[in-house]
Image 1: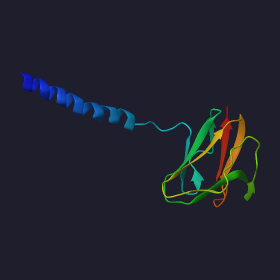
Image 2 (image 1 turned 180 degrees about the vertical axis):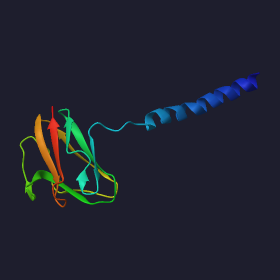
Image 3 (image 1 turned 90 degrees about the horizontal axis):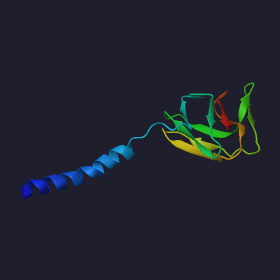
Image 4 (image 1 turned 135 degrees about the horizontal axis):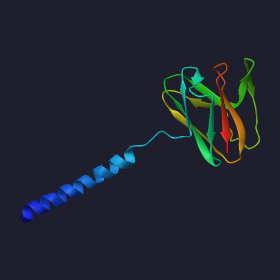
Length: 126
């Protein structure tokens, strides 16, 4: 009887870390994440909370160079927007991710890929 009790206790202790890892290892997609596919952002705008970071994730091996500003009538137009965190030619590629922020001031900010025409992202901060 004691042997079975010891086995149950040991098995219980061994399974606890597995249960904990399973729970913390599973995560839902971040609401502050924008994906890229090919030469575009999957979505052209996102709304985030003030104080939040923005994550950009590359879903393939396409190189992107992200900066503040936007494409206007087919022309890349860098911009310095008051309150916007700096994104100074940040490289995103090879299924990687980059983090921009925090966005501490409410407003609308613009990011673009300097090498892909019309690849614009608007970030609304509330």
